Image: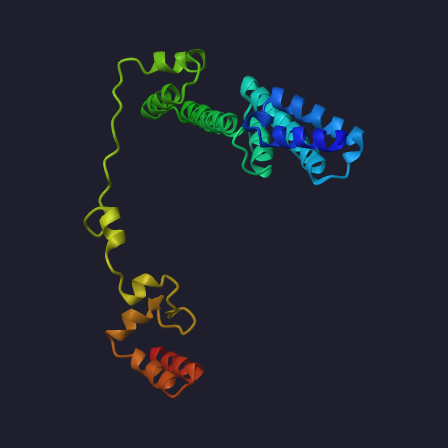
Length: 239
């Protein structure tokens, strides 16, 4: 009777929505230990209670790791803590700390990227590049002392947005990339002829199409023999 009463108390604790809190974990541990001491250690309720306690302890440890990583501000510690928390699976009690750690990790990455941009801009000696890097550092939230000298060097300058460069064949490079290509333009590795045949310079197959000489190679290919076509073309190009 005593064991059954303790098991019922354990069931009530398991059904309590606050069992996952620190105080709830203490109540659950006490109820599980009492039921086990009364001879109900092999019951499913006791087994479930110990499993919940193990999960709660693991969650508490992960939460401490996330908070310590947040306090450190180290991208390495944050990345490790986030990876451990994600590997543990979904935990509603970890969700808030995990979201904060992810946000801080993204901010750390942006700050490191801004630092790298400052270093590259200083090395380039380009005032516009340095000014853009200073703006990026301000946006990323870098401490002012890390770029205040750079900001002073850029004082009075206005950031000039780069203008799109026209493509050599007319129009912008972006518009040119969207235009359909012809066969030989889409395939930069078009075979070239002339050097090995003594024809006086390298000429591509599309160039030979205008002279009618490529028809000899086409005749060989139509016969299913590429080698024959190339030999005929070489003979036609000989002086």
